[in-house]
Length: 202
Ligand SMILES: Nc1ncnc2c1ncn2[C@@H]1O[C@H](COP(=O)(O)OP(=O)(O)OP(=O)(O)O)[C@@H](O)[C@H]1O
Ligand SMILES: [Mg+2]
Image (cartoon, rainbow, N blue to C red; front, side, top):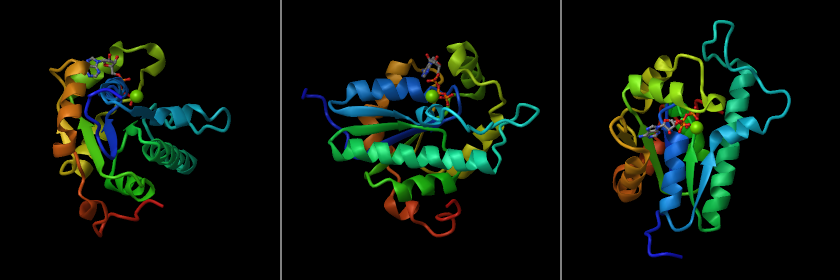
């Protein structure tokens, strides 16, 4: 144990593809005394066969019913693994695209670790596009994620901490999250359980 301060609960870092979730969550975890990075994409990659195509014929993000089930399965696994780490005294730094309130509600009902701190990385769209276009080819996505960014803003715009990392280095973003997430990112329990959107995704 070092003298670095711990962060109680679970960090959930979201944003569009290319926003920097995986890069930053790694750096956040490195700055905490006991922390684990839980990258939601890993649970998709674990599917060796039977993996649904999430894109339509025009290359747009459009998961069908099986794709939706597999995305939910990703969230279920993300929550289980995050909780396992939390129960063992590691702060889970979970990284996943969360697009809607229904998805956030689904995660909140599965996840036991509290408080839930939601950080939405929201660099300007051209910055996210540039980051995506210049990262390792195996992590790059080819589809237009502008609709996803709009949905996220509409659905989650009033929740958690929207952090514009457009002019930051990854390290600066990570430092800010470690220092301020407990104050700025906690989603109140009452909000997570609010009527109207809990339960739309089962
Ligand atoms: N300030 C910054 N914060 C985060 N990443 C940055 C920053 N500046 C440049 N980058 C680069 O942008 C890319 C972000 O890619 P990363 O894989 O972290 O995105 P992601 O949000 O996890 O995307 P996906 O949803 O596809 O997994 C990396 O190549 C990273 O080095
Ligand atoms: Mg990632």
